[in-house]
Image (cartoon, rainbow, N blue to C red; front, side):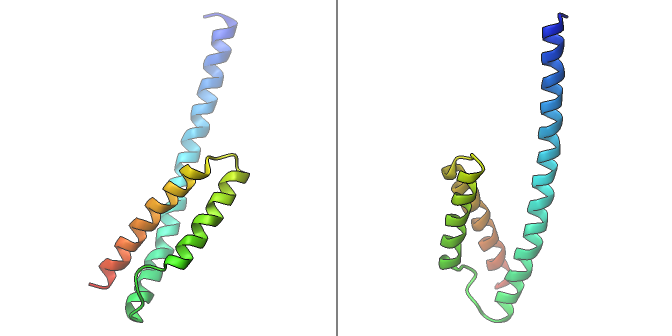
Length: 98
């Protein structure tokens, strides 16, 4: 292996290790987020509140799009990602109300 391809292999390994660490952070962060949304769902069920809050969801999407732009992440991707999470949270909230 040449010095160039050896260096490329080293860089590839470093990038992949960073990706693996970031994936772990994402999973643990989502786990923590869902702990809080589960608590919110229980509170909503106990107080007969609707499982969805469209005004808050719209504000959160707008906020996330702004954060994404500042982080050089495609805001449309961020919006889709948050919508996916919101849909999952609402599904969990509805379960609490059954």
